[in-house]
Each structure stands twice: as structure tokens, then as C-alpha cells.
Length: 513
Image 1: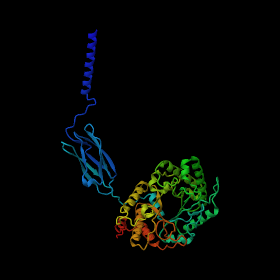
Image 2: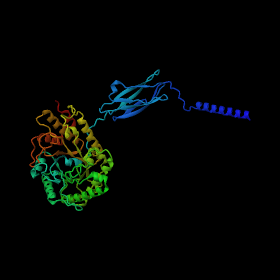
Image 3: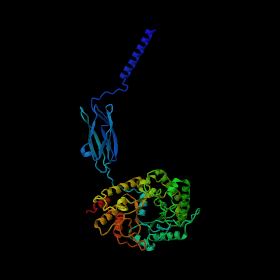
Image 4: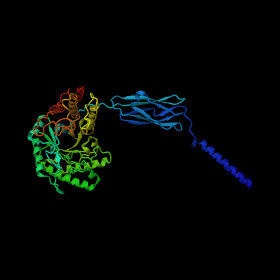
């Protein structure tokens, strides 16, 4: 028995050894054989102008080294990987190509005792944006009807103590002469921003103050008599987190609480039913615009729950359209305008065109680009390719309008720019003044080239510096002391049809100092 036990143990040991050898023979967890040469996969990278990261798998008998050519290091870099089992994955990183020229480089991969290999990298340049041939569609026809517009800003949209007042922020009352003067200067449309805060009664009627409504009606009549198109809206009723009145268009509250949303929609319907009812017999020169710049609290640049916030605005715009259409008369078919979040072009993709039996809704946006030059604290000294402060200015503006043209105008989705502008510069500073006039001319010519009408922001503020946008006297329609030259530059940009006066010709005559 003892011998049998010993024999059995020996057999088991032998079997275990055989299994171990079998595992080794089958590969198991042992190291793979070292490759005889370097190899990379992929061996070439082709990229569009946008930034790109491409993983490259390197097989090598020794840890490989990656070398970027010195003349490509400004746009091409790599992130090393872990070398294990004769393999390493590196990440080639291509920066966005901000030029119109393609670029290329050869990345060298080497290892001790091996012949080096090359990775071919190429990246396209940005596509040259050509001036489009505007299509014969409704979007372009509407753009040409509106033409170059003027905002009577900080006027009926001014308020004090929670109550809107025509003279709260400046001492002028609008007259027939105001609009006669605007028309004579070459503008074809006006936007009359109106704040209704302090003139709205209690729920559920939300009755509008007749005196305020009648005054607005009278001023719209002045513009009509002057032969101008008019856009009338609700303005500064939106809640931006202020504590200086009942800013009843409370987007934050509506997004966070459905009961608040329901209440605001009821007020929107009531207010717009009354406004539209007052104007239902006015002709097609009048366009109604739902809101101004709706934002979530004080959040101008939404980064979280963007779709949810924008969907509430979409709901409100639908309430507006339904309320106006139900009043009948000319309101059944007149043009209506609706903005998206913050009236920013960056959020237009979230804006849904409301259902409309008349099919006459335009999308609205505002543009004060670039902020640091136009209305920001910096008030940069110059703008454009001949200056130093913002040399890519024309390129950015052209890219924006081309994008809007491609996404909307070319697809026959009517769109307009409810506000644009730039803080007045010091006329006695030759350089600042020249670049200021150039910016306005180029901006308006670009908008016209891509088929988008725009309304200059004029808040009646005289002088120069941040938020000084006075061009036309709000009382008598005369030019302000510095308003004539910029207005004439913009009217020229919009109205001149000569084949020799192009966006490129404006660009070529940029100031040089």
C-alpha cells in the first residue's frame, strides 16, 4: 500500500509539470516576442482645420522616441504613453488651423537598433468664405424689406421705481420729427423697445394701463407716417436677477418651477393679447417681437441644462404667437419675431420656430461682436487686420454671418439682427475714430452681403466711451454731434449696389496708422 501511495503522488507531480509546460507552450502570460523592426499604425494622419487628437500605436523592440519637427511645434504636439510588451500608444495633438493655408509635417519615431519610421501629418486650412449669391426666397425678400434699422433704445424701455417711463433715462419725448429724421437719414425700419413693467394690472386679467398703451400706439403712428417699418416688443420686462421692479418674465423661476412657468405663460398671453388687439388693424409695416434678452437669472452664457432653459423660451414664444394670431385682423398674417436664449447667435440652434398658421415668423438675434471692442470695459483701441488689438476681427464677423446664412437664409428661414452697435469713440482721436467708422461699415456691409438685416442700437447717450450710443436725437430727429459720419458709413454699406463696392473693397481700405 505504501508503494502504491508513493507511485500515485509521483504521477500527480508529473501531471502538474506537464500542465505547467503546456501553459507555457500555449503563450499564457509570458512576454510576446520582440518585433524585429519598428512599426506605427496609422502611418499617416489627415485632418480638417478643427483641432484633433489621433492615437498612434507603436510596436518596437525598445522604448521608442517621438520627435516633432521644430517648425511644426507651434501646432503639433504629442502625449507619451506607457511602453509595455513592446507596444506604446501615443497621442498626436493637432491645434486648430486658424489660417487658410494647409500645413504638414513628418513625425519621426525611432528606437535603439532600429531603422526610424515616419508618420505623415497633414491638416487642411480653413475654407475661404466666398460672398454668396443671395437666393430669391422669402428670407432674403424679408431682409430687403426691413433693410437697415434703428433702435429707439432706452426710451420706452426705460424705467424708474419699477415703472416704465419714456423719460426715465433721458429727457426727450418722441415726436413726428424724430421719425421723419430717422427716415431722411437712410433708415428704412425702426425697432421700438417697450417695457410694460409697472403698467400691468393684477392677475388674472393683467390689464394694461391705457395711457401707456395709447402713447405707444401714438408713437408707432409717427413711424408709420414717416414710411418706416416698425418692430414693437416687450423689453426689460425680463428678469436678469435685478431687484428694481417686477421683471415679470422670470425665466429662472419658470425653469425651476412649473407653477411659475404656468403663471408667466398666462401673463404673456394676457399682455400680448392686449397689445396685439390694440394694433390689429395696423398694416404690414408693423411687426411684433415677443421678447428681448431672456436669460436664466444673471446667467448670460448658459452652460448647464441649456436645452431645458431654451425649451421654456420655446414654450413662451409659442404662447406669444398663439395669442397674437387669435386677435385676428391683420394680426392673423403679420410678421412676428422670436429670439432665443439671451438673443445670442450662439444659442440659435436651440430655438424652435413656433407653429404658425401664417408661416410668418422670423428668428431674432443680437450681435455686439467682439465684446471687448464694442461694449465691454476694455474698449480696444482698434479693430481689424490693419490694427494690433483685434487683427482677426473681419474674419470672425464674416464667419459668423456665413454660418447664419448657411443655417438660415439659404434654407429660407427668415432671420434678423434686432440689435447691433459699438460704443462711440472720441472723434478728436483720429486713429480711434477711423477704426470705429471702419468697424461699422464693414459690419453692416457683411450683414448685407450675407442677407441679414440689422437694427443699430441708439440709446440717446451723448459723448464717447462705454455704452455711449447716441446717433440721432430722440426728440427732433437731428444728428447728434458725432452721429452723422457713422450713420452715413452704415447707410452706404447697406444701400450701395455698385459692383465695385464689395466686402473686399471695404476690407482693402481699412485704416492704416
